[in-house]
Image 1 (spheres, rainbow, N blue to C red):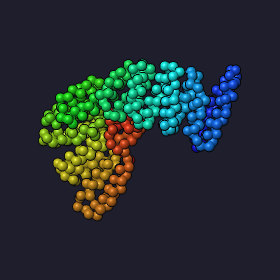
Image 2: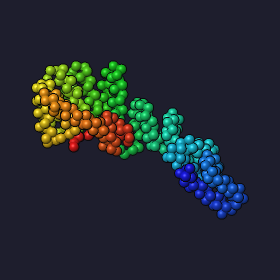
Image 3: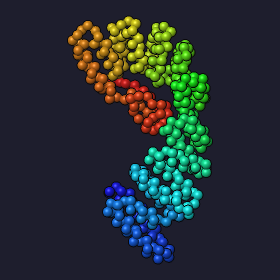
Image 4: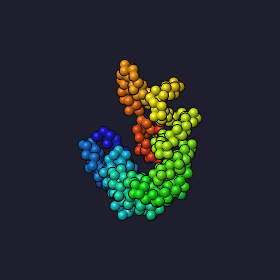
Length: 385
């Protein structure tokens, strides 16, 4: 109740000021009729009857060019506090006034659309933002909110249409986001077996954002599924060269392609070269798996021991524990198994990915950050003690 009182007091003060102003301007008769209502509204507040207080203050504030901003501010305050139903009531009350001019009606429509979005009523919000878009009033804000709605609904075609209309109105390039919309559509097409359609969409994604790694990766996966492993390997290696931070996401595709071609030794050479140029824990672990497969547990353990001396990492140590636990010394094995359990718990508490834009941490890769809604900003974290 205390928080709500502090929220509504500015509105009550505005109402009192308006009443006093009317009185000073020679409209004392009307002011004397409204003053009791003002105190009645305060009484409702003190008696914890906020809905009745809202009704009184809304009636007190006549809707004209000087008071409409107070209505908008009150509704915005309620929305920010999560009191969405009250915000909707206030903004609907504004729009219902026939005396409202076009500019103020557009302001009220925008705020009501935001209320609906906050309440999860996307259809109603969409209709209001489309109306604003057609009227060219608050067009940029309307399009930005439509984009949020369509992303939430995964309507990627609509996202492309809206972003195309929005681009001339904003400074930042929307190409990176558009590339992801095309990729989402391409993945849907691939799931339906429409490979030609998917290929065309991925080409459009590359045009939208030539630096985006996602369409290149999807192109490589399509090539692998269609049996062209050499083309897939070439594409994946180009990705690793241009986006070395992304190497962990393509290692399994590389392994599958080389396994099909019977060229795991070539993969080993490639990973060893990559590791010499740039340390990466995932490359180190993938290389250890190859060494284990080719030469056995001891060779893999020796490799990891040598690497961990200079670049210790939790996952590397955990894998080393697992390898040593398989060796003949039973006592050492039991000790290492106990250590392994502690390391697993420690590792489970550490998020694998982090957003470079807002710092959001996640255990899995999201193409769109769940926190700040930026596209392509989550990166795998490098682990060290």
